Length: 176
Image 1 (cartoon, helix red, strand yellow):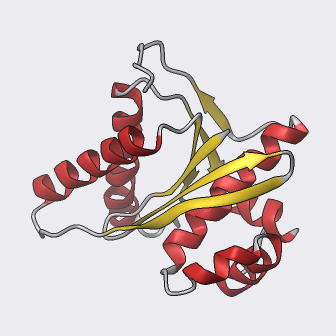
Image 2 (spheres, rainbow, N blue to C red):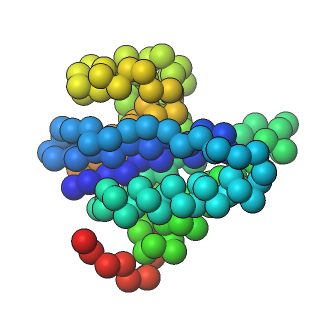
């Protein structure tokens, strides 16, 4: 199965596409989206178009999205970050793709065994799990976060564990 993992962000959203079989993964592609403009409306449109491009080019069987944790003391940051999350989820829904949401702590625990792992630790664990991902070492942490979300989804799917939220869409999408 093909899994698209997304780490939402307003200035940088990570994505990773993996082929999951048994308990092994092959990385098909990973990277980040960065807006080319400063205006909010332009960023929203670019992010929406980018997510649609990912869907139309990688045809994932499953999409896993990390639900960002935002401290309550920063409501403005939360509003801006969740704008990006809603754009991504809208693109998924409009294209008929179901998605599963995972909390950052849940992803960290799945990959490293600790819900409080730092980004460096996550990257080290990913290198051990999938040695080929070292060739993507030049990528920012957002891409590796998206890879971790995709791997978390594959693991949960195989083990039958319960993720944070599963969303299904009734829209029909055309298969390639």
